[in-house]
Length: 111
Image (cartoon, rainbow, N blue to C red; front, side, top):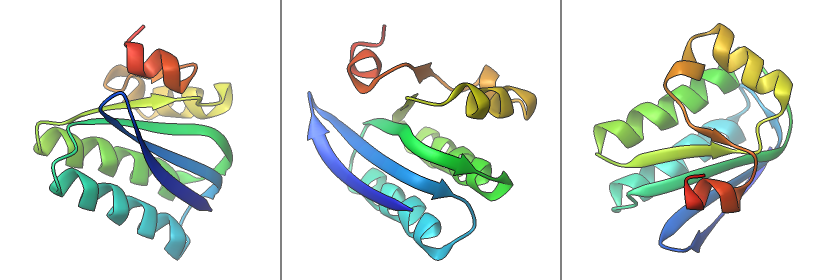
């Protein structure tokens, strides 16, 4: 997994790609997002358009990002989830509590 961060329209954009699972780089991604939340990021968009595989640990990482943001009164939106990933999120109950947008621009607009 690889990841990067950028700012756009006052929001932190977290770009993830590859396999979101139980590898150390996936936990590094989680901690990097948490650090930015701790540093004051209040609007976060996690772009998952280039994530090609996810397992249960990856779902847990996404849930942890959501929880960390909510605990800090920050807002997190997910963008670019594949249909398969969105179905998994719904099966585990996260589909009721996350916002999923087709693209980063849509997530930024809240459309």
